[in-house]
Length: 98
Image (cartoon, rainbow, N blue to C red):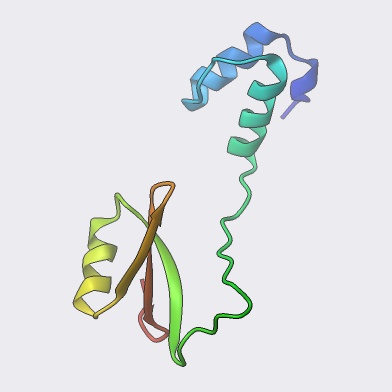
């Protein structure tokens, strides 16, 4: 894709609408949002270095909209940990594939 910085504000807002990104803000913030959408940063889960996970367990983040995966986790006795930015995080057995 062409360099976003060379586009004018009207063209940038047009691209934002095309991808369903909000169009409110200055040119710099809209370009930042477009870049994040077009080349997203992978989600990472940080755990406190002093806290060790139980043997045979892992933490997974599941989008709230993925009801089937959530049901699979709950049926297999996964433990809900917390909610953040549209994801539920669970402590599950490492063998469980979701």
